[in-house]
Length: 228
Image (tube, rainbow, N blue to C red; front, side, top):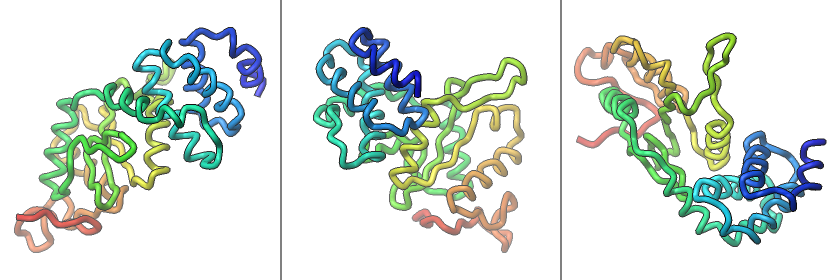
């Protein structure tokens, strides 16, 4: 609270980078006071031309967060939502080889999905069943921070923030981390994806051995069957 109060007092002294960093950080941690976002939103709206495309893409997610959290609040950036959405969409990265490998194995398991599905809000989902609002995201190294003492990987704030927003919009989401996939056998990867599908309500009947009758690919429940 002391940091938020200090930020509000010094907001007019901040340059564009300071403003972007501050409002983004508070959104990522789920700050529970709309006054800060309204104050920063007003300054951003007045100085919008000063900000980069990356900043604007962040402001778009901040605006979505405010809309979800306080739907009746008059947020200054709401009037710029379309231009901010365009900036966000332009920042999306290209699919990785890892994503392609995961997608191919999910198809083998029988889960019919769309790659790079664009939601109404503008989010790009690596693999999704839009009708059922189920998705699997593949997270490479840049989605994580490495703990210097333990060597463990921790999901970074922006990745957590996106996932939180998606779930707020009703998406059932599972994540495949690069370190869960690397150096694994094919059988281990199939089991990993079977577990991830279960997290979003899709059950592979017959597991890695295929159908219970011993013929054909695994059958799914909780998912639309793929058409022949």
